[in-house]
Image (cartoon, rainbow, N blue to C red; front, side, top):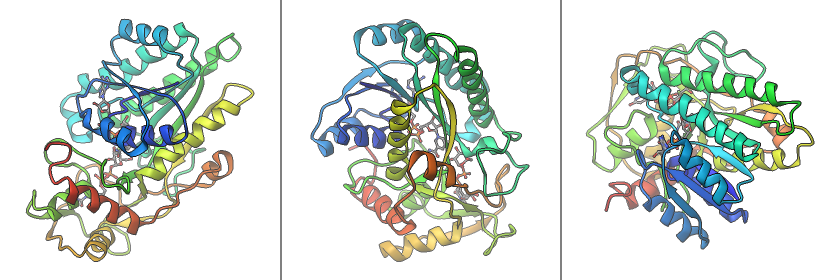
Length: 343
Ligand code: NAD
Ligand code: UFG
């Protein structure tokens, strides 16, 4: 059985679906602070399989011990966390508590239960601003510019240290750090997708909420970057490809002879600008996205995309879906569910 923390969320729910499709038994632990159980009900509907859901917090160590005693957990995929960059600047205590302290509680409970395999949701943000794209796993982590990014870099370091310290013990920690680039899109059924609370911080959900009439217009944050059309360039990855990357990482860990601390980028290796994504969305879906050009957003890079060779070689995984798939699937989800999981 695989324990998936944060499994009711955006990336978690898509990954749980792929795990069920691959015949894994799944236990989801989520406190529902940024998700609803409706996503998991829909995952069961799409897959035709059942999962086990426990509502709880990763910082509740006693609760974690109970879970590890009650279920035959072989590995953990750890998505649970807070993820809004701007909010992390306002609420650093909460971000370090959930993301860093929560991860420590989880690892302690795993070690106590003798569970050694852990996949952790990290982010391209840990590369910082110093080095130019494409970002390679061999590059050192850079300077992070907000508590969210710092919390991801800290947990990467903590897991690296715990792996090293436990390497020659009876229960070495086997860790995979997955650095996501920009996950967008939705399952092709249109039944599950991204459902941000309040005004979206990220580009794709903002575009789709403009398209569905929940927001009047998009602000394009800067058209004077040194990129092909002046707008910011990112490496967008379809969430279903991303979910499959977790299965590839898990399968590799199950075949590892020795515990490792491995790092992989999960990205497409291709850059797409804000204007290109807006135009693709309009063209593929036959809708208009009104926009205005606004000043640059603090902390944004001009260009960010992944080097993808390491994941291709060692995980035998690469992205399959295109920008067209991403914008079509986003629109199918958003137009079928204008208010997300709320009825
Ligand atoms: P999400 O908010 O949809 O999912 C996170 C889930 O964790 C939610 O269901 C939430 O209810 C749950 N959760 C939060 N705090 C918890 C706690 N204390 N105990 C138990 N559950 C808790 O976010 P997502 O986009 O699916 O992201 C999943 C992970 O991937 C996060 O760790 C995020 O930082 C990381 N990540 C996301 C992106 C992205 O662009 N979406 C990029 C890089 C990394
Ligand atoms: N953008 C706009 N208008 C918007 C929102 C975004 O023009 O309303 C632009 C941004 O300036 C950027 C691009 O769209 O050029 C993508 O922005 P997102 O907010 O969608 O994504 P980011 O690359 O800024 O952030 C993502 C994750 C973070 C993570 C970061 C670095 O959301 O969690 O990548 O890895 F920290």
